[in-house]
Image (cartoon, rainbow over all chains, first blue to last red; front, side, top):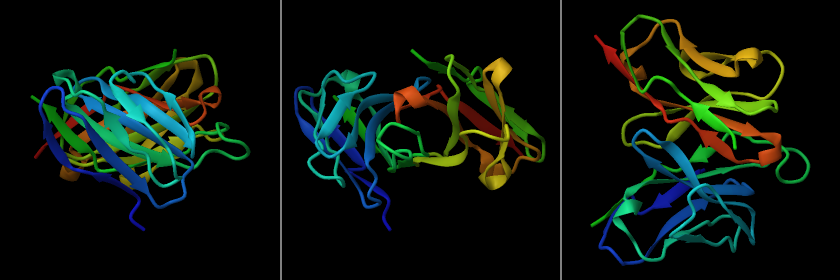
Length: 119
Length: 114
């Protein structure tokens, strides 16, 4: 059971380039999310999804796109990279609570992170 | 919007001494509360969680945390710290109205002196 797999682990981009950070989970989790981690600021939510075909914005969505075509995959796209997007990115997944989605927050399973540098 | 505060950015503790990390949240509803640990270069690992019931919860690696509704706090404790406990610790809060979304504190980095 691999859990949550993020690729790549490290990436250097030039300003203006685009790229996709991959996230895949094999636990049949409905809920998936992307966070960025910056020193002293903890983790801030970028986008999240409560199931295939459903995505929504988090706290810091600007400059990022997501899609959820399958339960397993939740890629994060940087449209035009900027130095302010230099950060460590984490993907996390969880089951939703009992009943319909959104009725409970279970513990997340995190990927090992992608360290992105934009120069 | 809800917020989570971890007042201590860094804590240095001697090996074998006790450790307490503070976490306060702001919101009116009953929260779901979590503590995660992040070792250098690693992802986050769940230490413990509180959903309801007994306000003192036990977690992995000898950690425990106590939910105090009157103080809006969920402090993490360990009676005797080991050198391997050196890491960054994050408190996170969720609420039923927010579904599965969690809000994280800024983190507390723990250094362990021999």
